[in-house]
Image 1: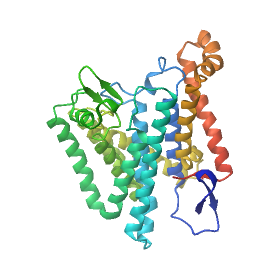
Image 2 (image 1 turned 90 degrees about the vertical axis):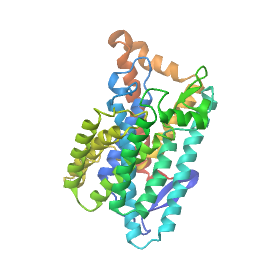
Image 3 (image 1 turned 120 degrees about the vertical axis):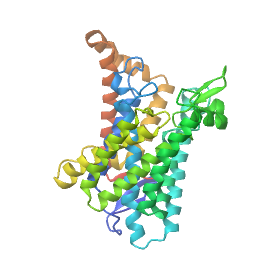
Image 4 (image 1 turned 135 degrees about the vertical axis):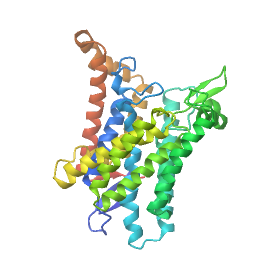
Length: 373
């Protein structure tokens, strides 16, 4: 199907247009569930009362929440393999495909910068933060698209190995993995200093979990997804299962020398989180594509940008207007806390927020409206 631009940047499907490369319902579903998980962990009712699995590990370690972002980046790689490579094989010129990928990457970057501008303005933050989730996605999408277009599979595997081993060597050579003292944090601080997510004026040291240096590890996750997507489109389901098992085992073994760390996106974390992502993809492919199971989460998956960006704008606006806390207090905490304690209402608010956006994207899907950037 072909999507043509509608008003306000919304694309409406034109069923008469030329067909695109086939979509896998499993990929849309897994992307959607990942976006729903992002909303769940990003919007508790009370940040002081969040169940441990819904929080990031303080530094070393890996909680279920630490798997959400690498799942999405892995799916970015899968989507590039499914969307770009068939066009290349059909005769579309490499330069044209790279230009299209570059424009899309810049739009994703721009949206991330705009969202942080809105957060800075509405929430009266102490400074503007240039790095962020969408910025990292845009960078990884841009480089991974170039990798897909100009490197053959053997070259992609070689690049993945170089990123994993090089990232390990960089951290080890740079003085270890301690907060603020590691080479990744020092590079980010030298580049942007006080504009990072965390910055200590007393020491002049800072850290950003989506900083530039640790994006090398995030790129490795995306390249791993690129290879998984190639297996998927060629019907190599067994390779997906085997790749997941190999990544999990190697990531677990490597963690004895190099800890799992999302903030630094360490190489062991790439393999551990990527292994779970490949396992989820293999299972979704089996259950949805092959056995005809329901594609739960598909509505989120086909409108991932609308859900992520729209939900962020909603939170910033409600918080900036002073409405967010009263909504939580009256609708959830006020009557639930005396009966169930403070943790359950905080989770209930997050679940209600996800349900609200599930309804929004389902309504958009029924009307065949898809936000494209």
